View: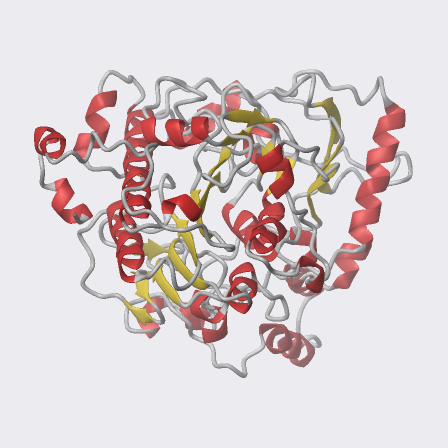
Length: 558
């Protein structure tokens, strides 16, 4: 039964067909022998906050996700990155941002940048060990040339959007005023004619089609389902919003409906795994990509901060693993897990040799997740961003001569978490805070600490980051500052080039897609441009170029 057919049926029709009464915890109707290498389904949502799932907040209706998590392993000490591109890059490479050059902001649609070509991605390694690899949904890892596309980075098939945000029905994406284009792709071609269909439904239908056309006995399968939801724009079919009609916050109401649409989509995928004989030898991972945005309906309550910040509300994620292959199921894990860990974990589960990939920052967590063993991870570098706005009151002196606290950085070691620079908006926002206030009004709710550039929290005892212990524990502060110095010595220069006017969709048939030739090298292009014109430029413009390109000087100045 297709998704399009389901949407046209009433609730009673579905019940009469046995669809909603399907017992997905019962043995598969199609008995299949266990395989040495499991089928892997990785599901990622976009901008879903810590408080935006049923088992954290009963106001959000996610029965499928709740049951899958309850029957599997909930990861309640799971960390992601505060914005889109960094989380996705770390998942697919197993490396911190400082080791891929993507430590500043996101990859914008007109930037000639993407994942470094010298890094082998997770799907490429899975292909090496015999997997059939497929991606459906949001990419957001660059596309300025053909070699950046998902189909060139390890996925045999791809269906989805390349940019960071699109309309859920028209697939229109804008990167600035009047810089708009169509963004839905099937493989390496533009998928014209798909407009009008809600992306959550469309992506789910494509996954079901992949499962239906593949033989689960012949080859293991890896599917990366990267939902656009629940990122803005806030759009949802009415039937999902109606159950939340009593919510006073209109943004929150629409957002909740979008979450429920995702929950139904995951149910449809799970149903297809059972129907086509994958389930008994499958591993399903669910992960958010960053914290929620309260301005547009999201909630990270009771955590501090929001999307785009290094407070717990920006980097503490929803995550769980559901699989018949788990040895210890139906439990909550508080082991420290980071999004970089999926690369070695899934590669090891697939029978690959993790030791052949040098420079990974992730750890193989399968025994921790499946058996409940102690986590091999003791610390997390949340990030070091030398290009982010410097904190006015930060200095080397404030950092005990060890680290310049004007630089935005965050690290966790054991139970301790240290933040320097400007971590971003730092209030605790209840879920029903009115979302239709002017954006400037939100500063009235902000927990303002204008003269600070250094914070220390014991996040095991104080997960809501209410008690700054920096002054009481200078010994711990110094140790964590030293860890930042250690990590910074391994950092590569930031890749954040200026926008390229050639990317404008109006120059490329009205759609977003690769615009540079295979021989184009953005670093060489802009370096040549600087060299030719340096005699004519004022000093301030020269500094601007160096800041945008982040020559090694910027990293070494920290």
